[in-house]
Amino acid sequence: MAMAYGSFASRVVATRVVALDGTGDFTDIQSAVDDLPSGGGVVYIKEGTYTLSDSVEITKGGITIRGTGYATIISGNFNKPIIKLDTANYAVIEGLQIVGNVSAGASNDGIYTGGSRYIYVLNCWIHDCGANGINSSGLSRYNIFSNNRVYDNVGIGLIMTSLYEIASGNQIYYNGSYGIYMDGSQQSKVEGNMSRYNDNHGIYASSCGSCIINDNHVSYNGFGGDDTVDGIHLNSCSNMIVSGNRCYNNDRYEININDAGCIRAFVHGNHAYGTVHVGAINDSGTGSTVSDNVIA
Image (cartoon, rainbow, N blue to C red; front, side):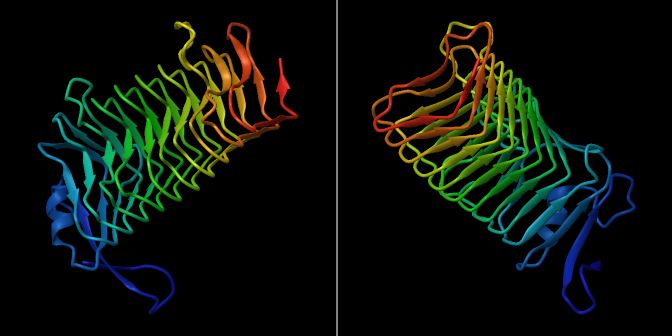
């Protein structure tokens, strides 16, 4: 089955339809993915609950997996990612509800990018995974994560560990570890997200350089804990811009430039306030600029 997108003669995309009721080309997702040509294509998954016995693995580039939204449910109770990309560049994951199992184990990520590049994860609900919601670790780069809801996972909501990645418009909450975790990220942007009620730092950046963290709402992370959890936490980073964020009622500091290894942080125009935290902004960095923040 082929489906045309865009104007006439613009391009024809190989499309496979998955439907539990037999009205599509396949009833299981992996068979549809495997049937696409080497140049990729679209797997459209109709509404229903697709209970997997193993990961959906994407090993070819240019593949889009698209569901109907919240009504397309992909679930798996196994100690592997629900959707695993293996050096599959230019993939799109869109409009799915991805459900793990909190007891499935430490590799039960919702989506694992596996060194893939130019990945888009859009408009998904990812929850109850035994590990992390979205794990973009390894040599992944140029990836975009936008307008997802990532919640109630045992581990981290979103992991970013590479170059030129963007997280925007996501809601990340009630995860058992960090909300957004950046480790070694370079020239990446975390913008317009909501990170709240996570057990560890709302947004954590370690050994990152020249990244932008702006216009996020970060609140109630580690709330009621032992004064060790921050809203935004920078550790051994350089040339970071933290601006326009609204941080409130996090456990320790709303924004924490944690150590002297943080060089030339620019923290400007944030709202940092709360009634039970240790403090609003802590600057233990080197050569920081902390200015025009609203502190209450």
